[in-house]
Amino acid sequence: MDDDALLDALRATCAQMPPVVAMRMALRRFDGTRLHMTAPLAANVNDKGTAFGGSLVALMTLAGWALTTLQLRKAGLDAEVYVADSQVRYRAPLLDELVAQAWLAPEADWTGFVDTFVRRGKARATLLAQVLLPDGGVAAELSGRYVALAKR
Image (cartoon, rainbow, N blue to C red; front, side):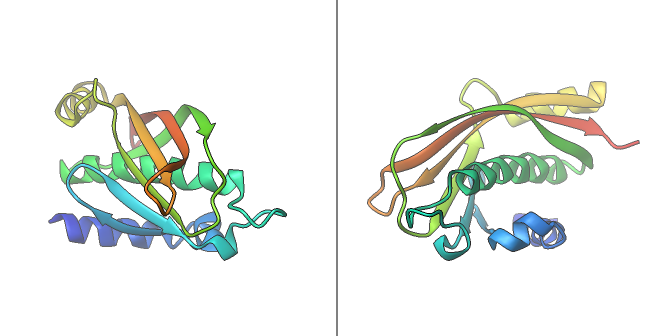
């Protein structure tokens, strides 16, 4: 399956997740390295008229989950993927559409992750994610450890 077909299959999975639907999150594209997602401000606004912090975290967390799931599916593997833990830093208020991207941390590689999963039936990787400001700055950033477990 090519990247576009994998992304479409992942979109169908996300369409079955009530929080994703409620927040109107959308998988936009995968460029081979980074997964890009969006969500409208109107569905994720707080009492100050800015993006709700929980929505920023949810979008970045989902982007990391989706990227990990996509990489496993590219390798022909099916797994349960979870975020084990994460750290978030809020840098600036966001008054516009939520635009996030996620990528693998520089000290890791997908080949090693997949090989470990095949050998052990489980693997973990650190992913990074950001929600961007319209001017190119960063509204929030996340570092998360994602775990893949073989389905039983």
